[in-house]
Image (tube, rainbow, N blue to C red; front, side, top):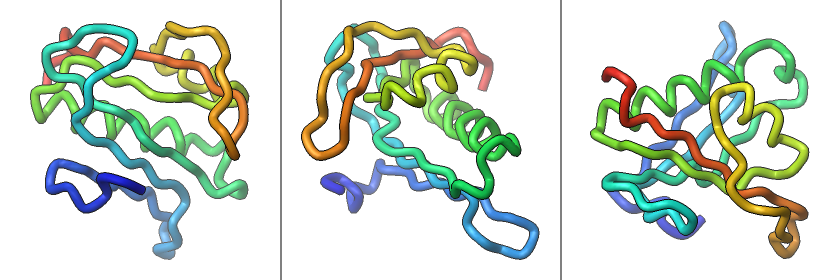
Length: 121
């Protein structure tokens, strides 16, 4: 992905007890296209192994990602969420801020944000 080698980009992985990767997330500082923020970060990619879905791995991974942004002084996290994953992000506190739009080759998405400025680091 463009920006993967940027020193500010962060890659997180959730692993099972035996070391297998159960989920991944990628974040980087990036301006939000829908809302002004002093120190916004983009959740550029997040995925969980289908076998790990429903186990809480995605929730734990997203919570760790948000905590990392707060620790680095971020005040907003935004993402292009697949419409099928919007409920997951809403349950974690994200708000839908756009109508549906198509990401070519991927499918329908919604713009979502979460304000983390009041969260203690």
